[in-house]
Image 1 (cartoon, rainbow, N blue to C red):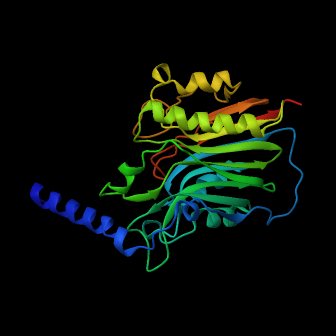
Image 2 (cartoon, one colour):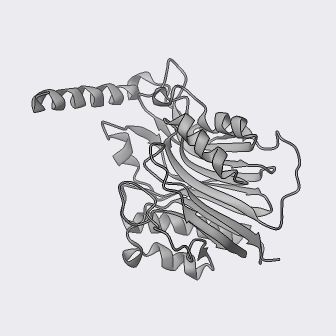
Image 3 (spheres, rainbow, N blue to C red):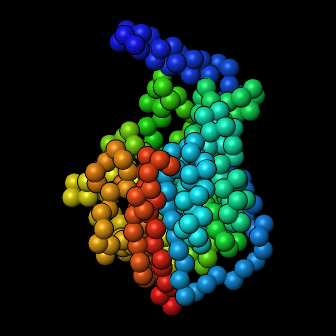
Amino acid sequence: MHLPNCFAIVALFGFLRLAGHLTDPLLSDRAIHQIIGEPSRIGDLAYARQGIKVVTWNIERGEEFDEILSTLRTFDADVVLLQEADLFCRRSAGRNVAKELAGALGMNWLWAGEFQEIGESSGRQPALIGQAVLSKYPIEDPAVISFAAQARLRWRLTPLEPRRGGRIALRVRTAGVLVYNAHLESWGSETLRRKQLDEILTEQARHASEGAPVILGGDLNNRPQIRSSIFGRLTAASFADALAGASDGRRTSIRHKHPIDWIFTKNLTPREGWVAKIEGASDHYPVLVTLAHDR
């Protein structure tokens, strides 16, 4: 295919996506960031204090659903943090990705919207993408932290991926732990990401009692650790890298040689952690750790 023809196809695709601003039902930020799910559908199980296995994974919209499901089955995790989980997008076969994964895995689930995906809806059904928490245990106390610091205009006007809404963190309690599922901005500067992280840490300081076990996991989109100001903030807030002792490679995505997906903990003891180099399911690799309560 000639190069001019490629440009014409990309331009046409971008125009059709942007036209969704006129044809798609346009949601308010409040509607985009709604929380939905089945937080206690599998019953009130007592959490296992001897250890919980936690996974965080940016699943690249959930388009490779079967591969993602097969991988999560092999992990048999207690708590799963997902970023980029589609809701009713054409590209992922119109699935409610979080609900279908939870149903197949026999887990409770909650999902919160991050962006409305313009041009991805079918008919009048809005298409969204967001974060999800799946758990073998009841999920309680959910809330969305909608960051004040955003790169909002960049997403609205991007021809190949126009969006409404903004980056969020999803907070829940499950398995006896306060959990934050974060997805920090990929387009913005490190200053923007630091501001978003600071909003999570400020909320955590208000919401967690002294000595309470806390997990902060997700896709932080950070620069290499030696040049990132994010990690000093986490250390100052008494969070520790749960995979600090891992001996294998820490690369967590195809596009970045340095890790950008993390699990940080407070008042929990990591027992074993690793990055699972799963190919063909997402442009990110799942990060896993087994944790024990300090008391």
